[in-house]
Length: 258
Ligand SMILES: Nc1ncnc2c1ncn2[C@@H]1O[C@H](COP(=O)(O)OP(=O)(O)OP(=O)(O)O)[C@@H](O)[C@H]1O
Ligand SMILES: [Mg+2]
Image (cartoon, rainbow, N blue to C red; front, side, top):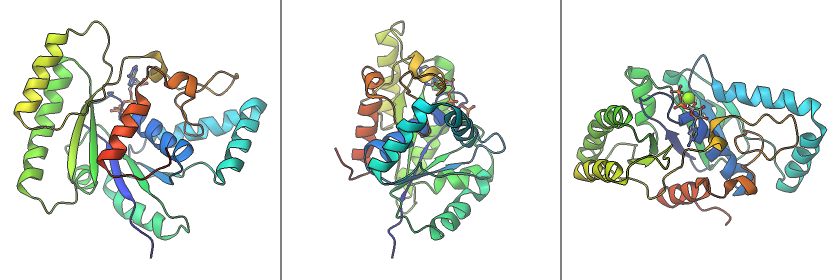
């Protein structure tokens, strides 16, 4: 009997705050660096941006010998290939995931669900509530904060009142923090977050060009955001991605290779 993998989402109804970016970075980090088996359900249908990114990367690999040989030697040493990415409508994602997992001989540890930004429909809400844990990226701007809190506070209240739900917790974290953000401003909002009893991760992610674009695997530059490679060690420094994954792994009780 296979053990059920954890269902995890980086999700919020706020658009463009890093849901897909952290889905890819988190999945690649755990699958290629931490010895876990990961699958991704790309539910931002029909764009399926993660699925499309994998397709682009495979096309680039076909003509780039540097990355081709890098990929081959990595797969050999890992004894496995890339993680699967399944494109699904949000309302069908859970049944599609179960169907997919039942047909696989691999035992998966984590399934990431990349949900769309429009959560206000029943299909997306039921998929959101079927997660084990949700992590909410939040940009330090008034608009982003207000929109995030108006959505997360009721979810958190629901979880506090109903302990029997599948979703165990939602954790917020800062993304795109840059030097210009005033410390007092962050402290004010952290006070609001505490007042509502919302869990906030210790790790904050800086605003950084590394996160800002998909590195095309055309040249031979170090890659950060990729569905085929983990974030390159030289680019991890200062990104806080490693700290984020470690903190999340502890919360969800993931046992992985250090
Ligand atoms: N820490 C960061 N520093 C710089 N750019 C970032 C950072 N995090 C995310 N971005 C950039 O912000 C943009 C939006 O990110 P992403 O597509 O992951 O958001 P999303 O929440 O999935 O959006 P959508 O709601 O459209 O699905 C991307 O170009 C991404 O590279
Ligand atoms: Mg997205």
